[in-house]
View 1 (tube, rainbow, N blue to C red):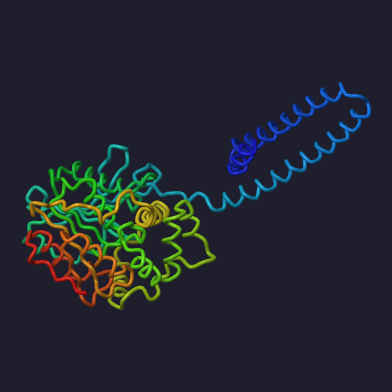
View 2 (cartoon, rainbow, N blue to C red; view 1 turned 180 degrees about the vertical axis):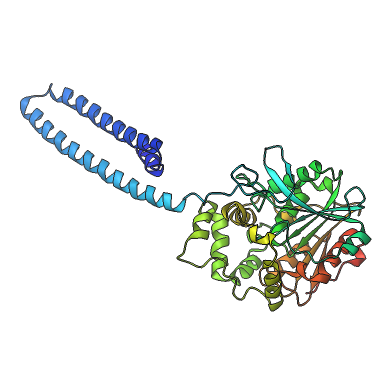
Length: 411
């Protein structure tokens, strides 16, 4: 009955909550009345003196029981209020494609579960392309991400680029069940709906690299190659030596450490944490190079990026944080080479001055997985993919299956 009262308090905003409250108090009263009737029946068979003492004790017991019920109700009320504050519903979502929603500006495909993914095509037509590449955007970004590469280079390489809004971003429907695994199958279904063929390339940037790890785990048979650009790491991946991951974790600002810890241990608190005003969250001061700040300013001028979070931060960046820093179903460092016949390649790109991603952890991954071609670019930060020469370099390395073209690992 206490559970009934508790759930009633938690859901007080609806008639169902009021019903549960009344039901809980009704059950409590009925139980107390039934117990009292049984005791009265028993006392009636006792001698007068014992009966008198018994009725006195029963009255005291009833008083104690009422005090207990009232105290428990107050305590449950406090717990329910705290629970509501922590688990408050995220802001209403802006749903694209509905009659009362914003107009769509991009084509979309419909997935098997009814969700839609919006996409954008660059380069040569897919019917003429020799290489078809799906690009996953990063944090607070979308399919309109800044990719500084000319049409002439894409035509020279005969490349078709497919950029899409990941679930919950810009014009793609949110996925309440989003996980590392679902991102891989979103990519696979997107490719199938657009008839890209049985195999394709994938590139992910920053937090958009966890879908690439998922592709390497769940759909390696669909890949021709993969690039992980400044990949975010999960400090709790089992294969990391605890001393190394702890050392890297401690170098982060407190606001980052708190956020990542909440995403891992109490992901159900992430919406409250990201919207509370008591403590700073993911402070960016000191986390970017001057070149990164310049790139950020340029990216903010892109019209599409201003709409990346139109469906609410909970459906986009909050779910991204939980997927990236939460509990994974697999350890990336236990993956096997998806191209044992050397008919494809996996690349990792890291800026030597990256202040967002601990460079020593990605170096460790590259050493643990020697089939990954590791490229460390000196003097670049976290936004290296947005520097004009770098994205072309990333493309050319991915499309040339030659281990000798990989840059040396810089220790």
